[in-house]
Length: 322
Image (cartoon, rainbow, N blue to C red; front, side, top):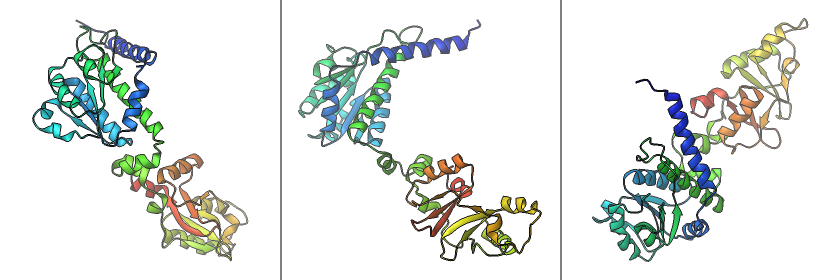
């Protein structure tokens, strides 16, 4: 039998998108109290659940932890065999079960309540076992699963995950969580390099090809070759940065009828090129400028136009920023 798979995908996405839109119009009345209980928590937000809910819960805990809310995932079965000791008096528990009747989860709820800490339930039914034990409920209710049998968790898991993301974003905004904070939790990998590495960490600071602007062009060509960045930097008699000459500038100069290797370098230089005066700028932000102005080199200067270093596109590529 032949199937129109594109139509199936479209129908699936439409059902799940409709579920999210509907949920956005029916947000739990407990939401404010849920956010406030987590914000006031002096310990950790412990997320628990089994099956698909457990998998979603593990992702949610990771998202919370990486966005300023200390959190970890606790499996209910492991909790019944000793891991309840991971829960402390200052914690908050977020329990997930679409039906609210998961046996493994239900078995730990009375023990969680012994800690006398807030219990947040994510379920479709406030009158379920989970709903009854919970201090606050974040409803997860869907009209139908995207599964053609209306059985496999699809729309419900999508909504649960999306609500977890929305809750994390509420907490981020309430904590005024900034890019710098995010970087401190993600120092490794490409994401960390984009959010943590500064211009000062990447820019070239020594053996820069720098000459006086009055230096003959023939010496500038030698400096370009020795500098190995395809550019020579020009400064005036007071050591202030004034311009640069690239390989391209040399080629264009050759087409000038008045061209002479004895002419001052400044004659064919790009004067007052783009610079940055903040070596603590994120390297990823500097890359945005490089791409915006379609250049390969940014010169880093201080407030008095003294040269501090040079940031080349190749260096950003080598460090994994680009």
